[in-house]
Length: 127
Ligand SMILES: [Zn+2]
Image 1 (cartoon, rainbow, N blue to C red):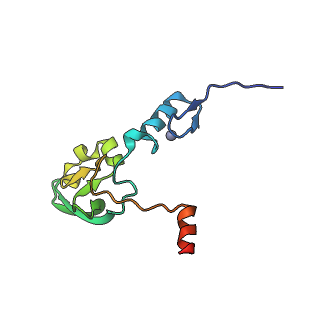
Image 2 (spheres, helix red, strand yellow; image 1 turned 60 degrees about the vertical axis):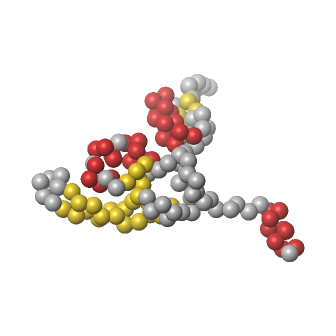
């Protein structure tokens, strides 16, 4: 019989397993269940994904670029997602993210979907 014992690294937030410590550490930093990665915009009904146009002269030629970004329906603020923040793209490509801010951790306008419980549904049937 052959027995292999290995060290397994487990994500503190989602319990995903890794055999390599550096992969586990990289995952934990980006894990969607890591509280550091929480944004008030996540699941907010007021967040929309819109077409976005910006102008750049990065190659010495003025050009118009069509892309997308997020916008809050309440404040009309344009925003970029966590990935852009984490990778530093807003600083690296200022033309593209000039009018945008990072998504906030707290927001007084946030509107989340109401999650119904089975008791809510039963009550609804009785009424
Ligand atoms: Zn995880």
